Figure 1 (cartoon, rainbow, N blue to C red):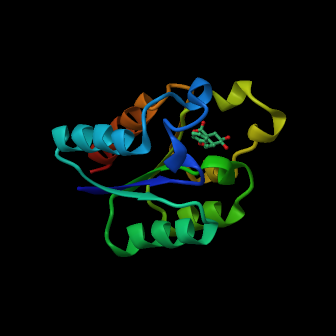
Figure 2: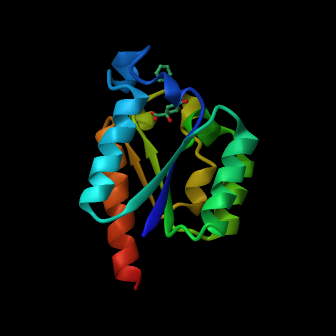
Length: 147
Ligand code: CA2
């Protein structure tokens, strides 16, 4: 089983700045953590991070064309602005889990909107980078039950 783990703008800066909001683990270490977790579940992850909206749309479409079983996505700030990402996830009809490192519900008003959420089977917020593993667990359990 192959799943795509997609991260949006600025998440490559993890561990470099703003540890109070996003923790002190680097993006590379987060990838390693998720990779180990996926392997322990017998799942093959495909990792991608981009600062560009259209590239994220392309990667969501690739997940569909490459036969992925599902997607875990932290769309970063595009969560709050992007109908294109919503449309891409809707078009693939792949089960998708939205994850945010910070507790967006307790942050600014403009972070209270998530366009992509309407196409997601689950949203995880505020659990730090461990939220990625929780997202993988939720997706994998969902896929097992779906069979
Ligand atoms: O909490 C999350 O995971 C967010 O998706 C992170 C986005 C933010 O725009 C969303 O509202 C919530 C921002 C990602 C920025 O990541 C950085 C990491 C380290 C240093 C600076 C930015």
